[in-house]
Length: 174
Image (cartoon, rainbow, N blue to C red; front, side, top):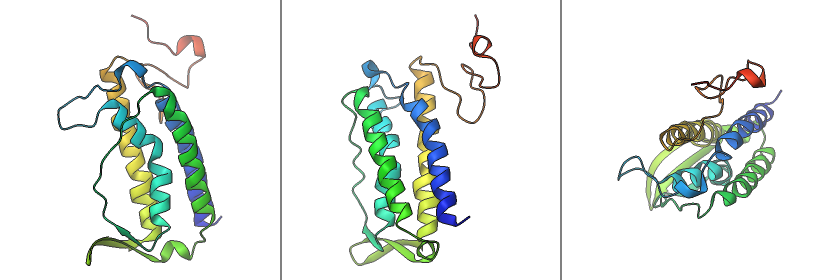
């Protein structure tokens, strides 16, 4: 199996999990923040929904100008899944347009003439697209807990769901 095939399979597998988390985002709490310096629930949710496609497009370029990192917020929970589906489709398309040799090419983040960082395209996909996505998905799970929403199973049981038990036994009783 090629490295590209493995990355696409991982993207697809993790997309299923991310979808479950995004589907839980409550429309009436999008402005909630755990701290003044934190992203709002609406910002973090939209960021999680769009990371794969946005970063895949960035990784497809040999050089990328350092952005200002403004995080728009979802205006409704209903926009998250369509944005997510588009992001996954974009990431899938970009990855499938590459081959394993392309993953070895050098990519650079620049600020004008200054190179901020350089790494192989494969490292951009692994660290900035996938690992970064998982990191923020974990934050989103904590946000859900903080606003009283049951957290879905991600890699195993959560306090609210156990995928290893029969559906009637997987809910928490009080």
